[in-house]
Image (cartoon, rainbow, N blue to C red; front, side, top):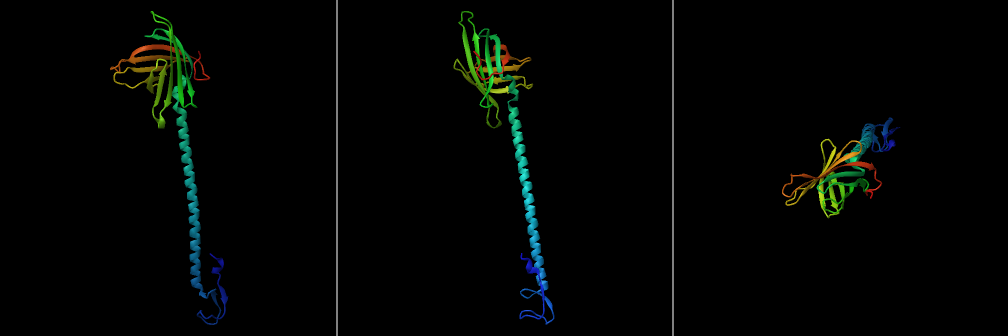
Length: 244
């Protein structure tokens, strides 16, 4: 909009395209009547103000929308961070180097095991070594195993996979008791296959109870204790491998 368009000028006489006498009158360049020109000025001013207000409102709306998006993103990030921080909390009592003693069908024995984080706390690794002395005509022997506890993708259940020196490979579902003190590993029931259940119960004064049970093939709920014992935490391990 050109500001000079709305400036009428007084003149005397008339031109070939204007009506009127020789007395002075207000005209505008192009010899348009003042009333028509005023109407045009009002229309231009209205358009200018409307456009200005709309642009201002759009900017304010854009700022509000951006702020809302930022708040949503921050809230989602905070919730995700809180979720990730808490996910392994029930398992932290396991972390450390432990010594244990116990007995069962293989006889009495002792050993060491450890629970240690790996892969930047994405998995919890248990390593175990147990020694069984000679008994009842059976020679002394040792047992070693390794188990990796991991969280399934997209918030799925916690699982574990177990390997030992006898060649067993077992997949476990991992659950906690309602009071959060007992961690249980249980494999799926398969036809014509034994079922295994091991549990760790948090005790007082850096102690923990351990139980390993077996259900015979065809009786997935018929568990009997195979080994049972107690363990005591020794140190926080610098690595996941138990000391020899």
